[in-house]
Image (tube, rainbow, N blue to C red; front, top):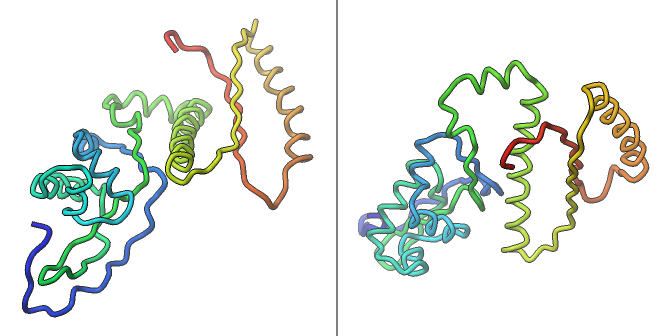
Length: 211
């Protein structure tokens, strides 16, 4: 049980030190994915965007506290929630938890059982950069969505996509060279050491079927 009577200890233990929750947590292994892959646990994580006890979460999502206790323990075991303090409620000491992040994403690495993918990334640096960039964009977009949904922020963003065919590798390389020649002066002209930071991305890769 997460709440127990302690008549011999007149004061709850001091507040635990805990780091601030990350904007996004990437699930990278099957064990953590298994802990996350339950609709009740997803509800618990959403409820624990702000610190709460098992009883508070149970009231919020409309489930018995015992059931919430079980799923909360599984999430804690997987490192998806953390205990941040103990506080006294009458003759009971109540444990307070918080999710380790504001939102959760599943990394493609979870399904990479075949080592040939990792070998390919190690041997092709540009492909590795593309894969890491794709995951970075997913993480950043999820974090920005949370800011818009929960903090009311208006997110100033722009996305441009285009499809183009190159007759040869030389044409593709010339395109990238010219693109960089054009974009570099713009970044220098409008960029500033102060102000709001933005990320500008260029990615060029062969179109995949079904995408």
